Image 1: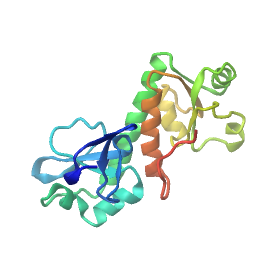
Image 2 (image 1 turned 180 degrees about the vertical axis):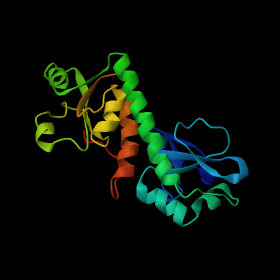
Image 3 (image 1 turned 90 degrees about the vertical axis):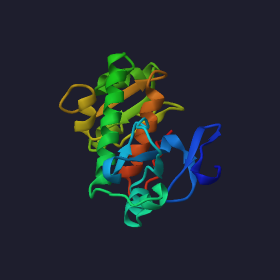
Image 4 (image 1 turned 45 degrees about the horizontal axis):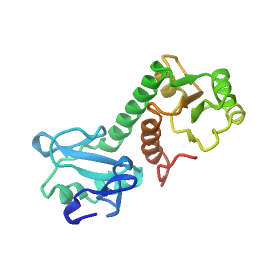
Length: 205
């Protein structure tokens, strides 16, 4: 990391400095924030809004600390306005992003939902990522295993996973290799970090 928060690139991609921890991390595991009208802080989950950005690790603890200790003012070097529900808004945006990515993968034929379809993909070694609803039956979920050298995502609820497949609820889903799978995994890591108490945002693999 260079002085002043400038971008530094390593093998795992560009890095930025977290306001809360002071540590440099890959951008994929951070949340970018920008200033809007009247110096109000907004989350830029997509990382595409114009203007200078500040970054915070995608964990509930880091975001809460940034708000509580007023670190955005230090990062932007000016007085800022932080809405009371900023952290919850970040979580909602990431859920929406993750659901949209899984939906796109489904439409392109790279994702399936439902126990039997997922079981079939796993048997044929077509699945790279196993996704199971956080509120699904533990007994049912235990009947499916994470693909060899694959990833497991378990941070979405059955209702949220259902939205990605145009259904009321979905408990089991799988993603094929390639396509959007890596982006789905990265977004899931960010969401998991927000939903775990003291979580580090990692998916199993």
